[in-house]
Length: 196
Image 1 (tube, rainbow, N blue to C red):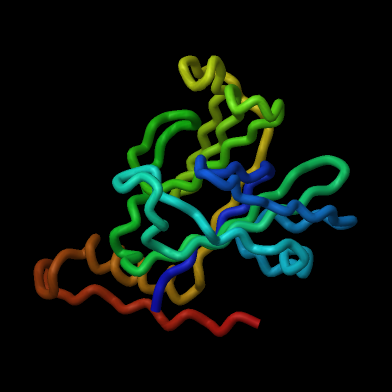
Image 2 (image 1 turned 180 degrees about the vertical axis):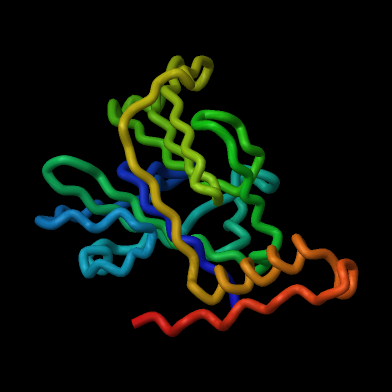
């Protein structure tokens, strides 16, 4: 079963350079969704999912290799971006911890906001699979950037409970070593409880 990581950012989604610009419909809501990474608030169902994403690396312009669905909401104070990022090989997701704005060389979700709509400047917001945030002010048609720009924003990640339980079991097993290495086997974690 593919793993899903859901990320919520208080931003607006950017597009991909192509002959026909993609359309993202942001839906105004009266009640802000909870920023918890779960995307189960009813407001998220109001926004149409954006799914036609393209690669930039390694095969620029090709369809993305994993399913991705992004929804955008806004209210009187913020813009909310919710993303479901599927991965057919969840054990290979790279989750590196670092300080804010550090390069982690790990799996991440990025949003570029061109609020001036000049296609020369952007506000970049990044959250990696460990929840590390990075934000950059990009200017001069991409020739300059300012990583010292630190706006106030939130990001939250969630993954299905069964994926967390598998990862916990693997972490406990890895920490203890192979069976018999210390005279005992690594304990198994109990199955994840069913979510209501």
